[in-house]
View 1 (cartoon, helix red, strand yellow):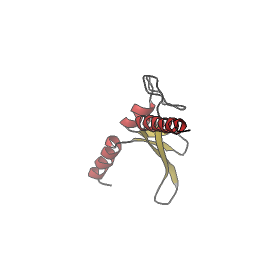
View 2 (cartoon, helix red, strand yellow; view 1 turned 90 degrees about the vertical axis):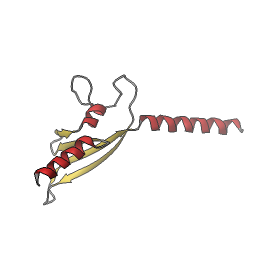
View 3 (spheres, one colour; view 1 turned 180 degrees about the vertical axis):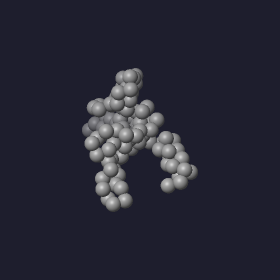
View 4 (tube, one colour; view 1 turned 30 degrees about the vertical axis):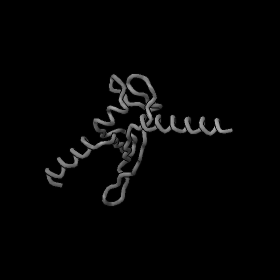
Length: 108
């Protein structure tokens, strides 16, 4: 890979719209981008391992996708996860479902 290709890869990882985390086969996080840090790192630099919350304490709803990363010989190198904060969308959909349930209850 040429230097320009490496720079492009680095820019894609760092500037992409979603959180990105790569962990090796032992589960050690080897790479994460700024979006992942914003979503998953609490003050003091500790990554979240359980339920997520915004820094101000409210619940955080995250859409996640996972994949296995292999070398050219198909040996497993580790896993990648991408995530995005969908809190606003989730809360809006939940409110809409509640409103629909209320309106159906009123027609009885």
